[in-house]
Length: 380
Image (cartoon, rainbow, N blue to C red; front, side):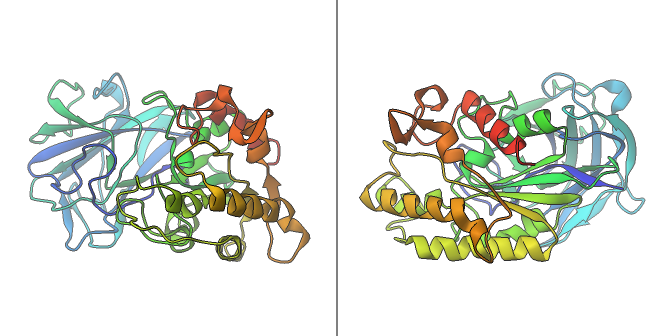
C-alpha cells in the first residue's frame, strides 16, 4: 500500500520570489532534486506533474537514490526509474504521471534525490517556487551519475516533481494546507526545519506539506497559486494515504490590502470575515466529503508586519474567534489548534513572541515552527 511521503504543490511558471528556471524550462539538461521523506518503506515511486503545461513534456531518463552530499547520490542506491516499463515517458499537458515502483529502502527523515533528463525542449515548467533547499542542473544526461560535480547550476525551487510515494503500509498521513508559513518561509534553508518536518519527527506519521508562499483562500494569483478553495482537491484530496487535514489559511487575503509590496495585487481585494468563514466552510465540506478529519488552526499574530492595519486587525480577530468556536455549529472544524495563542507575545498578543519571530513580524523562525508542531501534535 503506497502513501505519499513528500509532496509539493504545483504552481504556474512565474518569476517567483528568487531566480528560478520555470519560465525558461530545460533542454538537453538533467535536473537533480533533493527531498526529505516523512515516512519510509522498501519501495518508492515518483509522481510528476505538468498541471500548468500547454504541451507534453518528454522525460528521456530518470533515477532515484538516497542523497549523499549536495548533488551526489549514494552509489549503491541509485536506481533507474521506469514508466509503464519504459525508461522514457511524456508528462501530459495539464496532467501527471507516476513512475513504476522500484526497490529502495528508505526511512522517515531520509533525503532522496530524483534526477530527470530532458533531451528535448520542455517549455515553461510547472514548479514549486519556494523549496528552501537546493536543486541542481547539469548539461547532458546525468541521470546515472552518482557524483554531483557536473551539476553546476543551482536553484531553490522544485520542478515537475509533485510527490514521492512509499509502501509504508499505513493511511494516517497528515496534510498541512496553507501559505508561506506552511511552506516554511523563515526556517533555515537546507535544514528541513519547517513545521511539517517538525510535526513528522514528533508524531512518526507521514506529514505532507501543501503550502504555497503567498497563497490566498479566496483569490487566484499569478505568483501565489490558485485559490485554496479550488486547489485543495488536487493538492491534498488527490494524495494517497491522507486521513487528516490541517488548515492554516487566510492571512494573505486579509493582509495584502494593507501593503503595497505584493507584486500581483494592486490593489488587493478587501475581504470581510464572513467571506473568509465561507471559504473555510468550503474547505471543511470538501475535506469531510473525502472522509478526512479536518482541523482548523487560528491565524498567527502578525501585528507590526506589513500585513497589519486597522481592517486586518478587525478581520483576523473575527476569523480567529469563529475558528475557535466553529465546532459548536454545523459545518465547523472537527478540532481546533490555537496557534495564535501558542505563538503570541504575552506583552502584546497581536504580535509574535520575539523568540519565535523570524524578523518580519509575520513568519516564525525555527523555534516558532517547533512550537506549532508541538501544538498540533497534541490533538492528532
